[in-house]
Amino acid sequence: VNCISSIIMTAKKQELQTLSLKTLLSNTVVNLHPSIVLPEQETENSLSDFVYAYIEHVPHFFEVMIATAFESGLDTLLVPPLKAAIDFFITPSTLDYEARGLDELLSAAFFAHRVFEELNDYYQLNTGTAVVYVEMTTANLIIHNIIGEKFANELEVEVQKATQKLLSPNPLVDSETFQQHLIEKDEHWDGVWQHWSDLFAVKSLKLDLNK
Image (cartoon, rainbow, N blue to C red):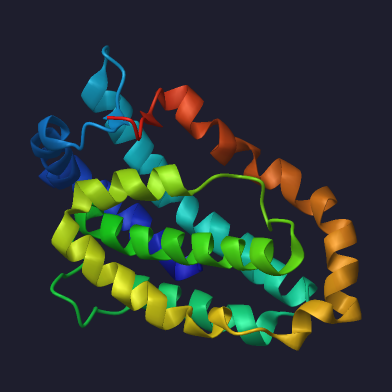
């Protein structure tokens, strides 16, 4: 996780010289799906701030997710997909991209956030309660559109491979450790995720599926 933080910091410094992410977003904003509603004022800046936050949240999310995996007793189930997402960030991918700057890290961040979303959905399905009470789908759909349909779909395939074991029932969710975790988790999670839940309101981004 510290390595991911370092990679992001280096890419941010590189962005000051290359403006690769700024260029990507400038070219993308006019072609975004109509369902993605951006503010009329400071449109590109709002989108850029959102994307920066999306990337910068990744290492912090990893830390909390990994800690929770062990606290809940579900580490043997949840750590492997998290490790897959970490490896995707750190090592060259077998897919057609190289991590050169923030524009490329956006793809790795999307992979990580989709894994987070799948883990959250798994909790919801098996316990009736989410790991975090934050809706991640909107953010991921926006980034899906930015990185492009073809590549995003390739990444979705890799996410499904990494989280395939979550599709099968697992007795760990009935363990005493996990049940105790459910009782105590709100105390640890509410403050951590509050900033993420406020992100769309601050950046004035939203998804209108009626368009």
